[in-house]
Image (cartoon, helix red, strand yellow):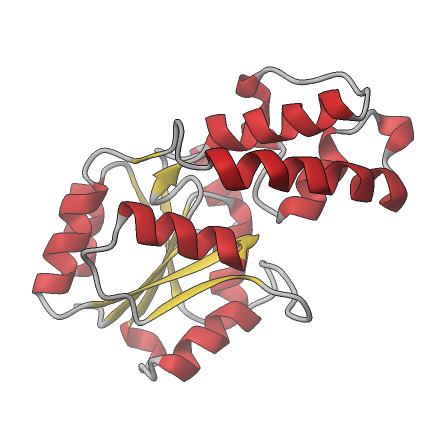
Length: 216
């Protein structure tokens, strides 16, 4: 049985893609760039807001200056609309209930900006006690750098063999590998199972029930 489960947020606990895409398209439109279909956004997300905004720009326009021009419009829209279409994946609330009732500590490690992570967790999962809710913060490198995992372990000291890191992307699997903790890749998120295998996921699970059985 695991004693601490660290969850990625976007694509793992919450399906956020429609609201992320809408906010990014709003910013692109405001700055005169072409927009993208929402179905394209799973390939753009996962590495933080700066990298998202860089990736959606036309190839010849991917400068730091242009990224910065998009940023205020993205936040203007996303801060007001981040819960419009976002929902927990089916079975996630039940999974978190079972884990916490069995004494498993739960935490979040996300490349989304810190304030956004806290707002989403507070909105969708206020009934749970989280030992740590960590997003992207200035001065702390984004995943797959393992610093965010080490921050969580400092807040909730746990032997690494009793920790499971859960995410939907190769970035998450690499984060777990660099932190020397066991990983579980979920197939209901934004990335294909092949990416999880390529990044050496220790486990690949298809449903929250499978994940619950693995943890407990």
